Image 1 (cartoon, one colour):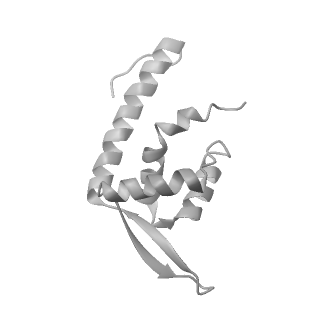
Image 2: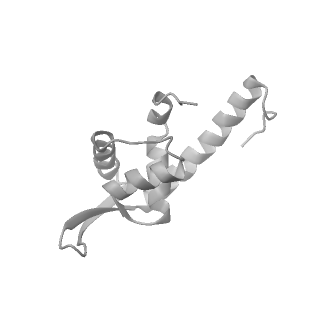
Length: 114
């Protein structure tokens, strides 16, 4: 079943922060990891990811640094900040409350407070 990609829009920040909470990554690596972990549901395009990364960096949720890879190619890696971790925690709590409310309306799991 195809999932409406507009549902990704509101959760993209949380998903990217979660990936970076696990390990530092470069852009293409994030795209691949998100695709893999979501069983091909989330296929973020570079044109969507990089502006989001720049915005998160401007908001002090991420920092970046350059590192040379084995093939002598310089890659820009991103790392979550303490503020980014705090924001991620808040977004995860919001997500739990939101999904519990949606499930309650749809007749799924009973509504539970987060």
